[in-house]
Length: 97
Image: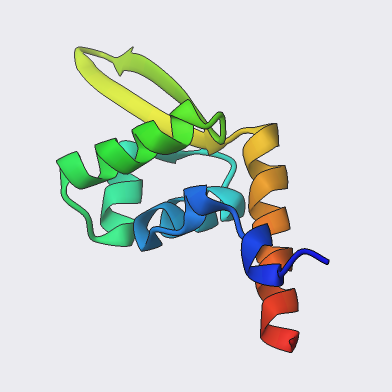
């Protein structure tokens, strides 16, 4: 039987990535600045963690210009939503013992 600790998703081990996914699960999409403010992160810290989640296929990134200003928004992908829910389920099972 697989030990419950091994069912946790390593992509969400880091507290920043966990926070990013939690915010994205609660919202349809979130701008870079909103996400940065919600999690109290620096630009570079947020960008590196979102890039890791994007590489895993868990976050969809949309870049556009509003007027002359760049605007980047993030949303949890279908795969990301499934993976995060599985991670939360594994955490709940681990807590229950």
